[in-house]
Length: 445
Image (cartoon, rainbow, N blue to C red; front, top):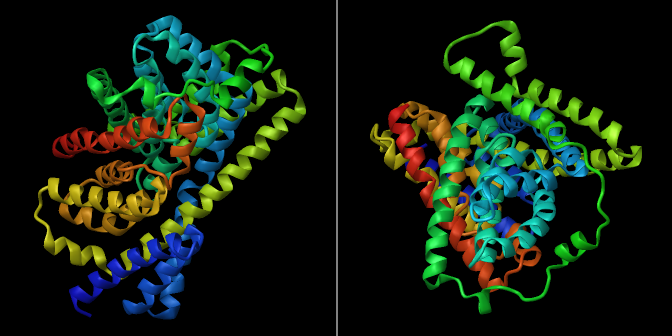
């Protein structure tokens, strides 16, 4: 089979998945499996090998990320129920002051709080961001809206245990600790630089408070102010399980990069074990401080949220395995030089186009990584940078097809016009800015 036919079949597969999702309104999970079946059959794998590729891809990826996603989401759900976020934001205000709050708030949401499912994290933090926006001077609402959007979206695809970052690491068979270290550096740089740029543009006329902000109190904030205060445990105790888990993951990654190994270091530094330890700690605190029914509700919510994530991630692995088995990676390597710049830009572009069409950050990133990931090691490019480039591209043009866009618009004091600036424009800028540290690190490592 000629190279052109294989490339054409791969392109038809991607376009077909997009059409099934957008036009036929078919679930992304089903669309991805149908795309994998089509690609396998028309590329010569045959029925038996096609099914084997689909099931192997799903199973292998679940082996890599299944427990990690489940433990991470459950840990985040318990932290949300314990009220850790409210106390953490209060500490940020007291420590760094209101003027620096957008930067510290955005960076914290994008890193430390990524174990909390994105929609839940947004619903909890939006009232806080809305209320605090009045304390940080001119353009406070604009800056906090942008900080929220950047923290939620950038952290999702770059920082483990964010579900997008975990899925990318699983698709490309990356060490999760390595993804955590490189992703955290990329996320913090991207959030701070993009927010500084947005702030400068807002002050020069990009943001019009009369047209871009709402005067009425968002529903989420009304609910927050009417809620009776609850007695929360001390912040160090609330954060201890999560921080311990992240510290163990980082320690394991550093030990691996330094080629230091021992049975206990490998065991405790494994992200699954690290998050399990954190989850057990959170359960103990929840049983001490929360009613039994509230703890049970947190677990129920966590299982519900992790289920849909696992299915979508797994079928993304099915498509990636099929792409690998048809030999697309071997063919693509003949069309690139050994430069890292062009291949990573191609990964970014594919993810960006997929996101514009589909509107799902996670789906766009894992599809782009699955299609182009197999070729990159053949060019001498570390897969970690493929994952980061795919994540960056998937952030481009978050628009009206995204549930997160409308949550950010309705839960924060901004109009739809304002959300197009603080969400669509700002996160799109972050998508491009993120490629700066990614390309630099790809050249250095």
